[in-house]
Each structure stands twice: as C-alpha cells, then as structure tokens.
Image (cartoon, rainbow, N blue to C red; front, top):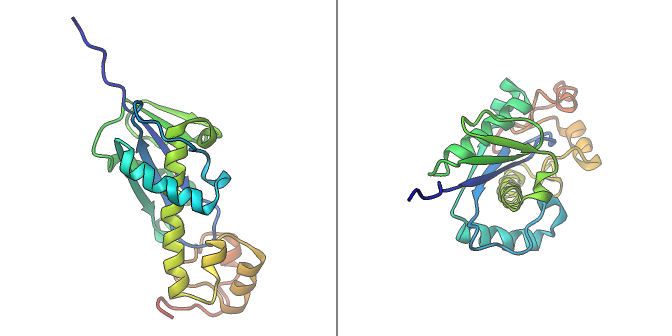
Length: 200
C-alpha cells in the first residue's frame, strides 16, 4: 500500500527592503503541523516583546529554520529587489531539508527551484510566513543595534535604518556611513557630504 508523500511547507519572508542602511534579511521556516505555535502574525503587528518570545518558540519548535541576508554591497550592485530574492534563496537553501512547497510573502517568485506560491499579505495569512517574518525582523533588528554601537551618530537603534526625519537629518549633517545603501536616492543626494568610515 502506497504511503502519502511527506509534505514540507516552508514559509519565506524578508525584513529591510525599505531602509536606507543595513542588509536585507530573509528567513525560511518549516513548522510542524502537529505542534502549532499560538499567536503567530505579521511581525509588524506584534509588540517587540511578543516578537522576541515568539522568535524563541519558533527556533525551538520549528522543524527547520534558517536566516540569511544580502549585504549593502549586494543591494547596491544588484538592486534591492534582486538582493531580496537572493537573501530568500539563501534562507531556503540553508534549511537543511528540501521543501515540497514554498509560501513566499509578496508577489515575486525568488526562483527557489521548487514549487512556490507567492502570497500578497501572506505574513498575516499563513503561519509559516508569519514565523519567517518574525525571525527575519528580529535578526535584522539585532544587526541594526550592532551598527548603532559602531555608528552612534545616526540613531539606528531607534529607526533601524528607515528614512525617518531624524535619520534624514543625521544623513544631511554627517553624510552616509559605510552601511548606507548608496543606490538609494536619499543617500546618493548626501554623497557630497562627509563619509564616516567603518568604526568611526
């Protein structure tokens, strides 16, 4: 008697497409259908404390997970869309298992080499994508906190690299640092100012 094939669904999402600085980070997560995690949702709808708790639950209870990134240099070379898709491919390839289906937040197929369904708003609709969104955001936020310690002039710990008024003001005064995305127009406009070296 034939057995049903094992279905392995991976959720894939990213964090950090919009900021002016720092990497774009993607995560892939395979959840156990027999061990659902309560409270999963789009990372942007959760408090920081709840995201942190859920991150630990996901990492300890998921069947598989992996977080990967594309660097600022890759973003500037490839463009932000292609760098995001690259980070997603890296996240899935690092799972240590081959999913039978990938559910990807958004409307762009990253080219994973396996059956893929793109889902607009998927981080609110599918637990696997919600879990991936949480891991990606938490991981990227930690990167930006590290960059804030390296470059305290920009306030990365507060805005995580997004183009807030405070960030734009700091860019205008200090110019971009090594972790700013020079392919993004607001950063390009500041390139005539001072450039802060890594570690400054």
